[in-house]
Image (cartoon, rainbow, N blue to C red):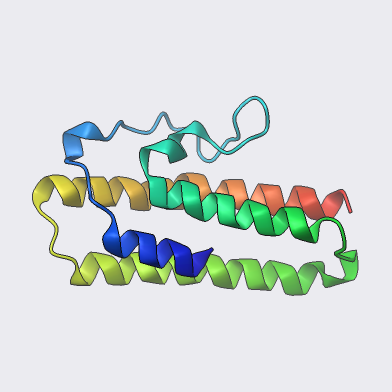
Length: 130
């Protein structure tokens, strides 16, 4: 999921800042049906990243023993850090115009305030239901 995100980020055509809706402040809350937060649709790279993690969780939930939860939590946190570092690096080396930079900041905010909390809750829910 992380490698796909990095590739998508590198080729992403940033919308101008005025085209990006402001977050409703859901802080990573799932939609009413339990799916990912709707705000992720604003940034396709984040939607693809989230779907990649959820696909992994879906595969794991069938066979993961609770005894591995600590190791898997560390791995998840490492993957989330790796995405954060990729975003940080992209922000430094990219040549974005003002409107594009606003869109990039919005994506970073959505990652921190929406994706990370949602994925952590989803992971915890998977481990509790094992």
